[in-house]
Length: 407
Image 1 (tube, rainbow, N blue to C red):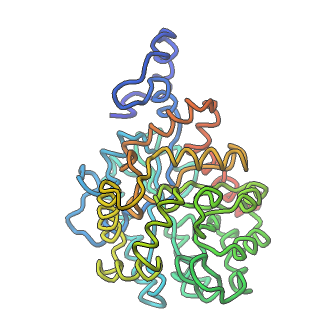
Image 2 (cartoon, one colour):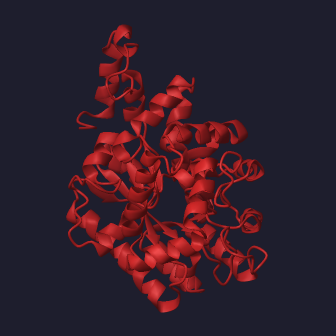
Image 3 (cartoon, rainbow, N blue to C red):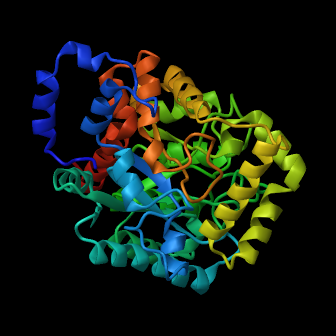
């Protein structure tokens, strides 16, 4: 179990170990002792997770119990050293108006209830300081990000309500356009952001809520950068140079995000990691948006249900050779590419756990130390690894908070 000792005590223990121990061969899980020590000292944060759907729709789901399905629960988060998680407040793009607001509020309430029901494991966090406090208290910081601007119902007052309840980023669109912004997976309707859309970005800056450009069209991305006075994030996007999906970011976009001071959080979804898988799966399943809508309808709008079923089918297809196999090492390839383009200060982790098909070898949160081990083997410094694991998103949170305070 992680964090049994204080970090200070652990650091002292590490310094007391002979150098031979730190350089011994990796244990059975493939993660070296040195990598585990770095991973444990870091604050590890994942900026996008869809377990909130299970928390709301599956009344038997207990996040503190180990599950055989899905990617997230407290035991596996503890094993993987995951210190902070942004629970996604997600409503399908085709649910709009009052019903979208109602479901968003229910999802927010599910996160609040979980933290109140399990105070020894979870702590609601709304600031970078809260995250650090949770880690010091050996708790997992539960944060919230809203995935889809349609949930504000074209109302800045509603946006302020969400912020007051603890939402700390807004993904401007989801898979479909909304009334004020174009999505990357829909036909352009607004040429990026409308005037109201630009007001949304300004309001987010005032509220200390991060602007999230995952899911938006390229033009919406550049419009948001032109308007914002604070760094922005891509909460769960990967590199288009490796996998040519419109949800991924081009190198020019990655450089622009870095210039803004923002951070790109790498998505683990197989179709965003592997071009071969993306092409094969799209040929197999047809139109991506239509397929998502059909699965969502079958599962009653429960994305976790949709994902667990589609992930099972995808993994079976990989095992049978019907789809190309995607290994967890592709995550490292995307991290490394983004670092080479933008620098280690602008890359992080945004898994899309419980919302996507995970690659083979990183099926759940318990496997996260493998990322640290792989980066260490590639020659990354402990300082840069620590930034990628969570330091960068904490830095952006702090900068966004300062902009809101006017300091």
